Length: 373
Ligand code: 1OR
Ligand code: 1OR
Image (cartoon, rainbow, N blue to C red):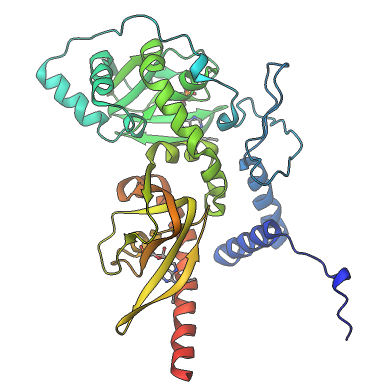
């Protein structure tokens, strides 16, 4: 057989990755019809992928939000009104909502305690300094709601942003029910963050209590920190194949929840046998995954930018299966704690469980090779 290297066809990594992900989805779901499943799968993939939006402002060059590899994709225009909010052309530095005093709504001790409890898990508030957090607490005001009340109507201009203390709220887009808030969470941030009409309608299903903040205060205190964080993690989150299954909106919530951590060359990030507190996405650098074997540790894998680790213990609820070290220089990671993992990525555990199968296969293979030595 001749081996004519000039005729060898290169299989691009992206093609391999997409086909692999598709095959896994097909094998896991085992749908009755392959073609229907494939059509649906790739349509969803296309609808959810990060897009390049030409800005409304014709003078601006359209921005590539995915230009890591220099492969400029043609500008895409989505058919839905709300485009990739990630790609929104907006410069918070140029924002002029900074002026003016922040509203203060006096509260009883009991009210303040309830408010603090309600905002405890609000990811959007995570990057606030203590002083800003106090301003937020001062500026929020109570709103009681009754069953059937419309809190937000799709297409309206944004007035307030809401944190839920109690009540069930249904979210509709084009009259289609798409999700439900159950006594926790927040909504109404999108229109205020991106200066867009309301993306969805939110209606109370039960009576309940909301904490509201007006648009100006929201933008003055929260805009820059929230926007910067979402922007900062945008590229990373778009580059993780597993997260392609997330809606843009969910990816943004994920960005709110991430915390940056930096490790020096050789530093231990995870210790085998420890209890798990979260998982990591690699922003920059390389990590070495090592396992205890008799008296030594052996390297079982190296992971780089866009890959993740530490998910296994979260999914299996077991101790860490391996140790992980920074290697070859400084490593920048984005950390997602267990709570946020369960809230945002909980539904992805099926995808993550496929990794376990792979780890187990590798483990068996390794054990087999060792006994053959
Ligand atoms: P808003 O200011 O645009 C409506 O007003 C609010 O509904 C919106 O902010 C969000 O806080 C909230 N897509 C868009 N907005 C959503 C979604 C959502 N869910 C809640 N809101 N999706 C559902 C994701 C599970 C994506 C649907 C394609
Ligand atoms: P964790 O939470 O158990 C250690 O903490 C992490 O190392 C683990 O999650 C995985 O994210 C990551 N087997 C087990 N864990 C691995 C492996 C692995 N690779 C990376 N991790 N194997 C290597 C597969 C290429 C199998 C080894 C026999």
